[in-house]
Length: 381
Ligand SMILES: Cc1cc2nc3c(=O)[nH]c(=O)nc-3n(C[C@H](O)[C@H](O)[C@H](O)COP(=O)(O)OP(=O)(O)OC[C@H]3O[C@@H](n4cnc5c(N)ncnc54)[C@H](O)[C@@H]3O)c2cc1C
Image (cartoon, rainbow, N blue to C red; front, side, top):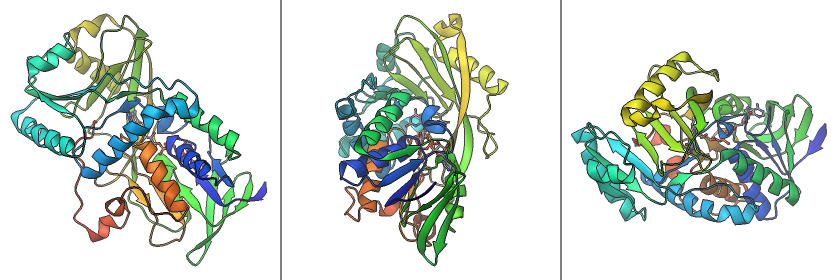
């Protein structure tokens, strides 16, 4: 392989393919998406499909709100049923201090256009009657949140960008990004070289490694997160239920399976996608505290993926100081699927040299040197 493209996108997850889709919509199709494995090998094929607008930072609220609106139109655009089910997100609080923060979060979310509500434990139980609310202090709920089927989104994008004339190459690993001064000259892969002056780093948990190839530094660190699915049974759970205190989330898919995960606060950073017994035990014990009725259900599969974490749990978007035309769309922690439509649109605009639809100054990598960073407080796990 020895080729030339206007842009090379590294990563065949939702953000690499989504960025390609938005470039294609603008008529820029001299683009290749490369993945070292299969499409969805990264977190995009391993996540809970949760779409939530109940965030604390203005940036995340705006990204998630605009993205939710875009997801609502994506079935039609990709001509694919993406199983976007808006059964809401029920966020539970187990202490007074957190409940006070929830009140402030709801105010901020409402001001920015998210129609979340602050609820009493009894009101939360009306939404999920099987919930044990004996220790719940308060909750928030937003009906237009929900879940989506991640593989359908990835393959919907891949099919559409291929129809547009964009190349998508699986099993093609980027091994180096060659620069001359601040300019990108070519990308080296295990299948040959590609001439280009523009690279998008959508490599998820491997994004720091990819940045290093170009001589750039981003502070992202990969951390394993585990998840499971149960056998299907009669549908009774409408919303996704989460608790920041327990680090747990769970929802029931349209097909009846419970999908859920829990974070391990002692997880060591690093590339590790293996399942653990700790997860099986901790997740099932905690889940039963929330909904005792689940004791009769069998888990059928567990797996793990990487959160690509940053010091403030907010994404890194845009250019970097060291190299020209090297765009970042990474560092999403546990919420890179739900904000993907908007961040991918903005990334495509930046690649095209257009004014971005959203101000991303506070999401650029320079924030870690220049600004007082505000940590996102609503990360599960
Ligand atoms: C267990 C779990 C649950 C989650 N739940 C949710 C959720 O409910 N909602 C939500 O919004 N988010 C969730 N997330 C986070 C979300 O999945 C990610 O933020 C998002 O999928 C990131 O997508 P991406 O395209 O940026 O990266 P990824 O999907 O990780 O894709 C990166 C790709 O880059 C490829 N790559 C890496 N290095 C190279 C290289 N050198 N050359 C070529 N290719 C390379 C990889 O193979 C990979 O396919 C969850 C994550 C995990 C792990």
